[in-house]
Each structure stands twice: as structure tokens, then as C-alpha cells.
Image 1 (cartoon, one colour):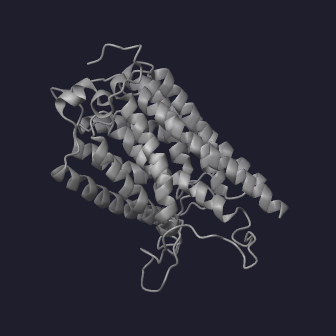
Image 2: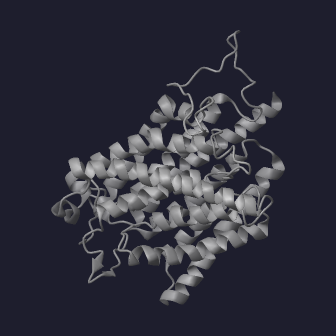
Image 3: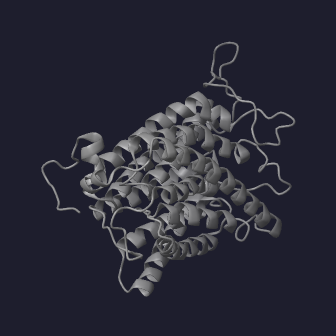
Length: 413
């Protein structure tokens, strides 16, 4: 009982840290975009958290951790609606659920992860997507697609039953790439913001509050202590400590290398590239944070930092407009981190690398097809993009009738 209490308290602390990450996402997104769209971005982030938790309680948790029956191929198991009450016949708390945490803690911790996938998309489509279609997308993607994706590995589905099981400790693929693939599809279907490309060349559209974006990244880094630390699923001293060390070292290496490569490439010290390098390092280590040595973590983070710079350049070259760099951070570095499990660390092997490739390809197929169908259908029916006038004047005024800073306005175009 004492061990369960200790483990459960740690898991609840980690749950709080992951919840705190949503503030970091919100700060990062509004900081890297223009003042006139601040309310819109904040509204979306609050919607994702609240509706995401309700959906996860009603259907997501049981869909993600179903009962598997013969003939399902590990694709879709049997699930029910709503949370059950884990009580014994005597009406007391059932302590046989798990030695590391209670049923309720498990639900809440996993529920915090669920909302993250749609938050990644929110930043990528900022400043030009209608809020109604985005809300519909969030309901379907968080309510159904993310739990289905999670069930394939964390819920005991086919990726867990491979001869060499696919490995994703805390979600480089299951959380970050799931959001990243959808962000890529959404950005492609939406088109770029007015003024982003001129004569085929990308133009900088500066964010209105870089100090706030910086605060957001530091909050996210702190929250990752819960994101990765909680994924140990207990308060095991050795494994938890190692996980936090590898997480921090990868983040630091990602930031430093992204800043260095960016400076060499563009001849300027770009803070936003530094910040996204930190996030890239965090995403990259997330798949194998419990399997890596400190040296492995530094290498994984460093490569992720370099990937950030080149991925941002590639996205611009493809004339895709991602205001916050979500695709580079969560998709490119999510793929890298997942594959890195087969290259570095305790379980690295050729067979493991193949399993990692199978996992990446499986989630790519599910997420690309599902997000394309959802967004494309809305594009052809209700439309997904605001009008030119609404985009130029700002979504806050047209979709919310509010101003984030009513007593302090900047000149914006």
C-alpha cells in the first residue's frame, strides 16, 4: 500500500506537469503569431483541453485500452463507453488495478496526453483556419483517431505483438507524429497565409511577443519532466532519474545545435530557431528516454536540433506555411526519435529498427488518410479558411469580437 501511494503521488505530480504544458503550448503559439489572432489561438487551446478530456472519458480511454478478441488483427478491439468504477464487491477501491497507480490516475495522466495531438495542429493552422471546422476536427481526431492510434502500441495492439515489438516510451510517434502528420495535411489543404510567399520566396511574418514564446518553451521543458518522467509509470528512483537526465540533455543539445547550424546557414543568431531546437530535442528523446545513456541522449538531441533547421527550410521550399514550426518539431523530430530507438540505447538492433520503421509507416498511413478525409470533406462543404478580409483584419475581431490587448495596439499588416 505504501509503495502504491508513493508511485501514485508521483504519477499525479506528473499529470499536473503535463497539464501545465498546455499553458506552454498556448504561450508559444500566441508569441510566434500576430497580435490580432491571440484570442483565437487561446480559445482553440482551451477548447482542446476541455473537450479533449470529456471525449477521453466518454470513449477515448476505453478505445485506447480495449479488450482484444481473435480476428481483430490488433487493429480495433472491443470497447465500451464511459469510465467504469474500479471498486471491489465490498465497495472499496480495487488496488489490484496496477501496482504503480490507480485506475483514476491512469485515466487522468493518459487524458492529458490525448489533447496534445490537436494542440500541435492548432499552431500549424494558426491565423487562417475557421474555428468551427477546427473544433469539428478536434472532436473527431482527439475522440477517435488518437485513441485508436494509441491502442496499436500502448493498448496492446498489433505493433506491441510484433516479433520485436515497436517501442515508443512516451510518444515521439504516438503523440507527436500523430499530431504532426495531421498538421502537415491541414497546412497543405489550407494554403499559406496572405503575404507569406512573394515571388515564390518565403517572407518572415514576425510573432508579436517573442518573450512570451520563450516562456512557453521553458514551461514545455518543465512539463516534459512529467511527460517523460510519468511514462516510467512508477516512482522507480533509478529509471525516473535516468529518464529526466536524458530528457534534459537532449533538450539542451537540440537547442545548442539548432542555434549553431542556423547561425552558420543564415548568418544570424535566431532565437526562435534556438527555441524550436530545444523542443526538437525533447520530441526526439521521448521515444527512448528510458533506454538511452547520457551520451546517446546528447547525440539524439543534437541530430534533432540540426533536423529542425533543415526541416524548416524544406517546409518553406515546399511553400507550406507553418507559423510556429510544429511540423518540423513534432513530425520530423518525432520520426527521428522513433527511429533512433533502433540505433542507440539498450534495445538497439537491426530488428528493432525495422519494427520502428513499421510503426512510423503505420501511423503515417492512419493519420494522413484520416486527417485528409476529415479536413478535405469540410473544405468542400463548409469551407475551412477565413475570408481575405477576416485574415487581414484578424480572427479575434471577426470570430470572437474581442481584442487580446484592448489598451495596447500594435501596427500590424
